[in-house]
Amino acid sequence: LAFLLVLNFLLAIVVEAYMEVRKINVDIVYEHEFFSDVFNSNLVVMMRWWHGWPDATALSAKLSGLKKFSVSYSELEKTGLFPTQDSTMAFLRFYSKFDFCEPPTVRHGRVEAGPLQYVRHQAHIQKEEFLADKLEARL
Image 1 (cartoon, rainbow, N blue to C red):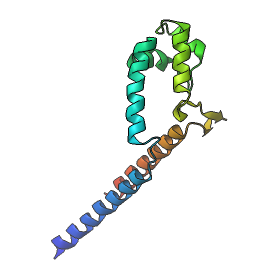
Image 2 (cartoon, rainbow, N blue to C red; image 1 turned 60 degrees about the vertical axis):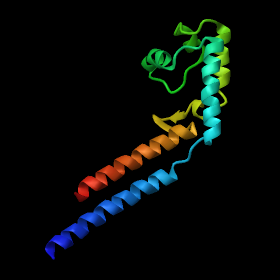
Image 3 (spheres, one colour; image 1 turned 180 degrees about the vertical axis):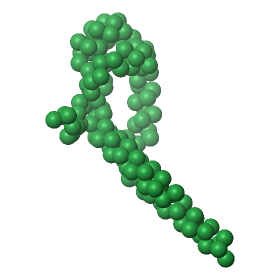
Image 4 (cartoon, one colour; image 1 turned 90 degrees about the horizontal axis):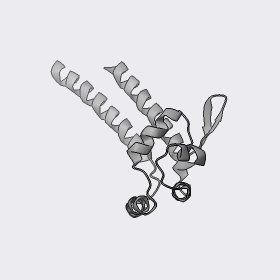
């Protein structure tokens, strides 16, 4: 009887943790539907080839040292990865249509508003940390 009681408590803890994580996953809002994402992914490959855009990992490695939320035209040009100024402008025009490229508003060291994806990502991280701490406290 004691074994079944302990097993029931353990099962209740696991099921409650599962339900909290499931609720977080249900609350996540995706930016676009599947077909838009597939189309834009293929469009990026074609645009990269057509305009001579750099590889995403190479550009990310160059820009990661800036420690900024947003990047300007001149900073993209200084990377030396874009073959022409027209290529850099095409890159900025293409990515400016996406919400996640909008720079966040920072006041007094805190992000107040910005790309919806960034704000949601920060909220998701905070929820995950809270749930992990809560689960650790129970165990």
